[in-house]
Image (tube, rainbow, N blue to C red):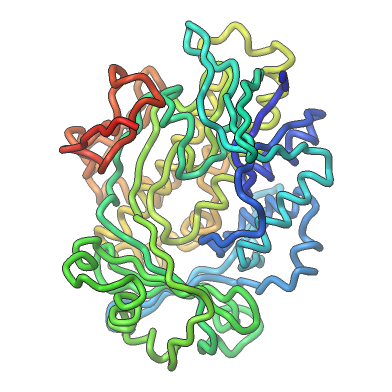
Length: 462
């Protein structure tokens, strides 16, 4: 089979990318192995995520689904004695700032809606799993081998592959990209469920709106979230050091029930009874960065090339925006306008790296110097922080802003970019000896799997 564009993964990133490609006159094929709806985490949308959906013409549909309306985010400090609030905002064509709203979503319903909408608009859905990347001798990607649900296997020839596989990082694991490096948040674990009967805000708009996101800070790398997903249920999760969980030797639900209320005294006030509407899920909250995530015939989107930390809910924003950015470049590539470049998507790769670098600097300062961070939010850089929390993180959105440059100064960090357009944070907590997760001279892709991450990693034959 031969197709122009294959999208690996039918989540919001892949579905949004498909809809933007259709606007460019390109009919993509989405390869998805799961049947929707299915449970997923990451229910809060930022202001810019909402703008992506509105540009796709999905604003009315989001309202018809009765998704809770989010006006902002409140962060409670240790002991809940202090808190700060950031409103959802938007910028107009003249870069004037205004208050806005976005949505909280039940991901099973939202993801299914996005995939169905992409299909309705013309994208083709293929059920199966990507098993192997097909490369030319020069390293360019020529296709993907897939396995159908009935066990049949087929090699699909493609002109472009968009890897929207999320944390599965398909192309990175296949070594199509450069190496995959460990990040700074690899020793945490997230526990989460859905809770009935939680106490929300008392208002309909602004800081007291009942469906706002709440974040509860305990100490470094130890926090919880509270995200309303319908009129009765709230997503409640906590992130703790992995060592704490291993030491307790409890089941995930036992640990969740025993630790949640100790994170912050505001939590038991918000949740008088822990009435679970969903089982307790667990995921490792590790971080990573993929080098060389664009090349001839491929672009990695969102989490398929970089994941930092789930706090502040940037994941959906980044993956949908990168899908939007990639669509016109794919059209140009198919038209032969980028053929003379060694990496036809190098400018896109650099723009994405710089944008997520801004996020990383913001998140790092929150963890390293929370008092300074809250000062920036409250008074010194209020508008710029509002922009950052909305997901306006790219160069064309006036980044890095003076606030971001201040973050780097306080972190004693500079940013440099090498010849491969790869971000190198100088003076940060980045430790080269802990990476990469694989080396270019590792065994041939598909013959091994990795056990563990970082130093001391072992190979196991499959």
